[in-house]
Length: 113
Length: 110
Figure 1 (tube, rainbow over the protein chains, first blue to last red):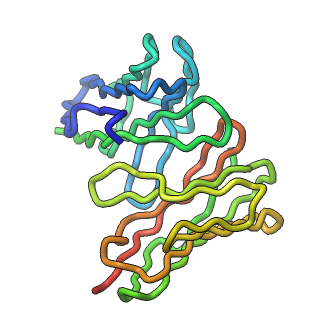
Figure 2 (cartoon, each protein chain N blue to C red):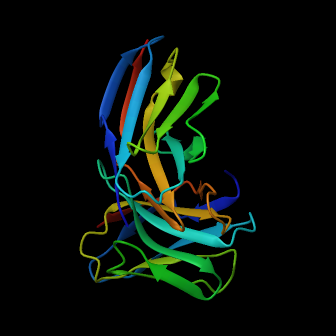
């Protein structure tokens, strides 16, 4: 789905460092989401945003922060408070209406140095 | 929100056979059930979805069935091909709360 772009594809974090994952969409979707994917655990919701300047915590928000200053952009910061950040991170967007599927980006794989 | 249970976690079939993946949930308010396919290292992509007002939907070799009373839904792939090998995720939608199953790794052996 070329409408959602995540960068970088691979990211390495040092001890005590904050890192930011980028997610941009040109689908004119109101809602955007961040998921963490670990082997055997499916997709777990970190944060989501339904409109600009508003966002809500998901199930595993601790150690993460987000912003939604523009409709097209929903960056995720993995803070030093997140002690186990190694995972595959997926960004998604959807029309803000019930019963609409999500469109995913290609993901960012984050590892600890 | 309520989660969704997905089984089996791994499934291996011979090319040409059928594959069935089942998901169960517990809340009666969920009304939209998409299925996603994720190939290795790639993004999940929607392959089929079903809404609560129908019991079955088909798209070529893929079908999904929904039993709202029993709160389970299933993905059926017929005449499997090696390119069907991937991880499949079921999901359910209750208002603006979407939950995913843990995934099924399907391997189709040529």
